[in-house]
Image 1 (tube, rainbow, N blue to C red):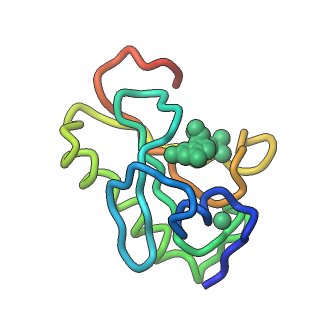
Image 2: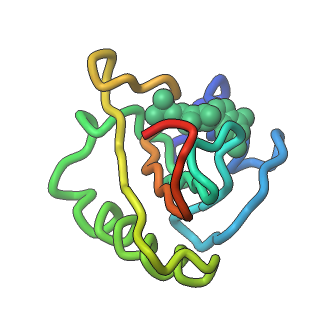
Length: 115
Ligand code: 5GP
Ligand code: ZN
């Protein structure tokens, strides 16, 4: 599996940086964002290091599909039943700060601090 020793999310996958984990399987990890915009703000990431969505292709379709399909299930499990938002920031103009693909899943009662 491809990893980047300097990547903060690879370090979270490796357990070198602690996180509040919500879900984990062979391919995916889900944890709470350290600076949440919404009452529930999760990050869904692949365990393998993929820098941005530009680095994905048809070979990642199943992985990306699994990430998306997890969102409603996890939100419901966390009591978010009134709606949520999925955001994948990509590249400089997309506002991507961490260069490891991640899906923001944000929900819970409004107002939110952002978004
Ligand atoms: P981006 O702007 O790249 O889409 O979002 C990166 C997200 O990662 C931000 O919402 C930020 O709060 C979150 N984040 C950055 N470093 C850490 C960390 O060490 N732990 C956790 N849980 N979240 C982080
Ligand atoms: Zn990484």
